[in-house]
Picture 1 (cartoon, rainbow, N blue to C red):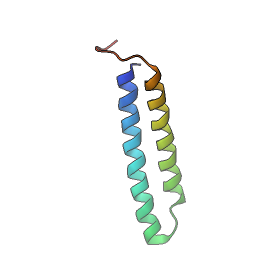
Picture 2: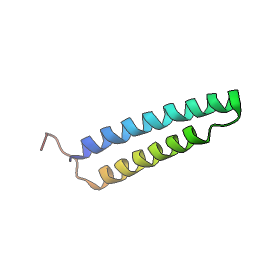
Picture 3: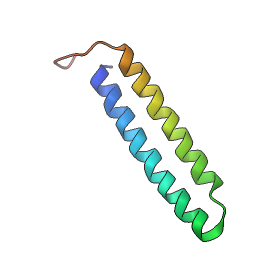
Length: 65
């Protein structure tokens, strides 16, 4: 998998984490209990961090391998 693929996956995971964080905030404001959504958002943030870290170690490419 290329660096660009990893960065794309990191971006998708970060976007998902942000969405879950917004849902968690809204749920917390309504009910005071958003632990499950917050945990899911946290997990997606870690997935994004992992993909970004792997991408950082890979060489840049100019074409599809």
